[in-house]
Length: 177
Length: 177
DNA sequence: CCATCGTGGTTGCAATCTAAAACCGCGTTA
DNA sequence: TAACGCGGTTTTAGATTGCAACCACGATGG
Image 1 (spheres, rainbow over the protein chains, first blue to last red):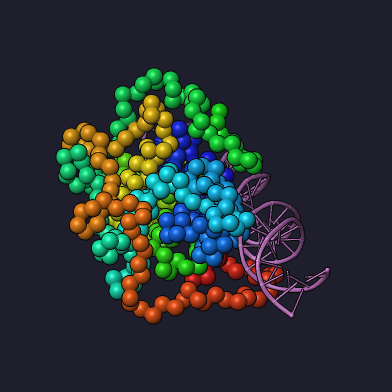
Image 2 (image 1 turned 90 degrees about the vertical axis):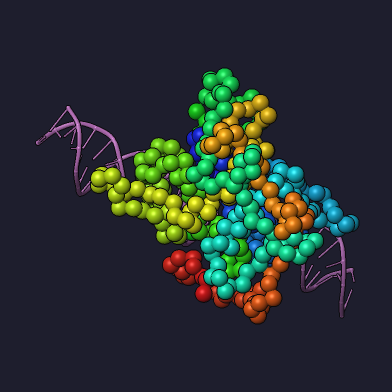
């Protein structure tokens, strides 16, 4: 975890999310949360990871505002974890990942779980990226564009935003010249 | 990347992709590849990671069929790396990640790169998951369904005790039959 | 009332993995 | 032929992982 994923975090719209998620486990935790898991033990049983790891990941997800630790749920003295709005925003990321997985990681005859629409009980449609006018866009139909750069010097001087994390434990923060 | 992400890889359509990608760096490499990078040095300069790491990640991506190492490109004695079909399939995953990043990781006034349609030079539309009939689906409108096929009862297969440890070198952590 | 179990963690520690830097081979340029 | 950039591999310290053991606490339970 303790890897600043890039020295360019501040401007890469992909690296920041990755950094916040933390690692693969976290994404699987989120996935399970979408699936209805709420309790520590549920996640642990479902994922089969060590308790300390799960503990750390949950803490990290909470610290990044992806999940919330709600003090109790139904009288029990225990905590439950639920996705925040931000966490629910990962839905499409997971969906995309799942579709990619279905496309390339399963033999055609191999059975696998799939995402179905509750109402119709039919599989969901394929995700597609579209232009404003509705054309479907592929990898080569798009470019990354840097918008009219407001105040150029900002790129070097970044801290007015609460972007940087200071977790409760020493996260070996290097970087940040 | 030595973490088998789950003992249930074989049935999780999310864990498999994650496992193949390997780690965050790999995703950023793929991102750069979509952006036009092809050469070792390009990736390195763009990402700022150590060469051994880049080397390992590229090797891993190639091993998983996400990128191809093409022996030469234009006479040079060097190799270039390009996305395979499978690799290009990550386009939507990256797009979803980017949109999530835009939604939650940038202050409203903060400038950031964005994905635009080449032809119209307008930003792309928002991704959305739809049902067969076209309804837009949110996290709570879907379920994971496991198809009737195949007598999969492996979820119950929890080895009660893997025996004593000590001296279990276990060359690599592969445990997947 | 004491024992035991299940849950939700934290702590300790060995083994493993990461990544910065040094090093290497090979064409090119000077 | 020396110097250089490119594409990588090896070296090495130090960070991370994850198993197991431990702790706290409530619920059984006998």
